[in-house]
Image (cartoon, rainbow, N blue to C red; front, side):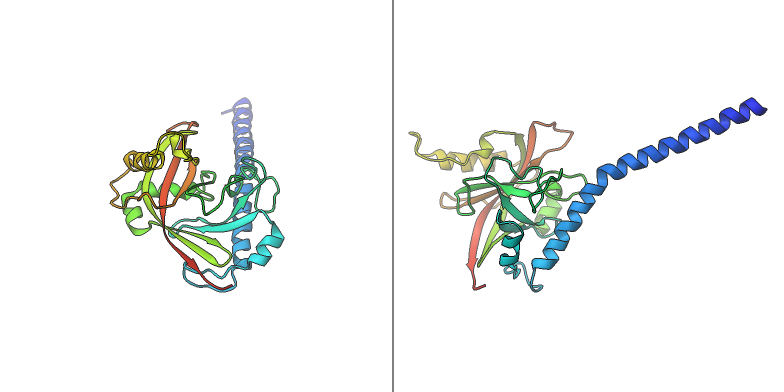
Length: 251
């Protein structure tokens, strides 16, 4: 090959090695914070769960959680997914979009509800990022599969002395800030505003038929995350559920 050929060959190898190192460093820089955030949440879960029990009562040490951050207002668990996280409520809109459960910056953010809302609302929206590693609300997209839905269609929300059980009834994509996110159903001259909204959520169900339907008396919990690159940044993936039971127990 000759000396000149050997030189260029070695240069190509060096450049490829450097490129590989740079690529790995960039991947590590992107993925490590996500992995670290997930590990911290799993450590938190282990530290506040006083004993392993069924989904109905997880025996959470609420006093310890509140000492960690008084903005922690509940806990959410969706069996069959990675969703097993504290729920945060800040004083500002979207405050926990990029804050972890301790209030520090984190790209993955937290699972959160907006200020002025509560678990007793007629319609409550709970938000979380769609992370590629399926952490936060990334694994919500598992509900695009009917087979998955048939095995796992329950949502559990926990507060001190209370477990709220929910059953999923609608799954679809929608535009951000669409009617799906309505939470104010006060009188505006339309007596059927709430019923019309419930009907809309049922009719929008897109991935597979679901027999469960909400009634006018029901309370609705909506889990919301990004739809992903195929749909575009303006679209959201939502999972609607209706509250089927609220269990009160002693701490």
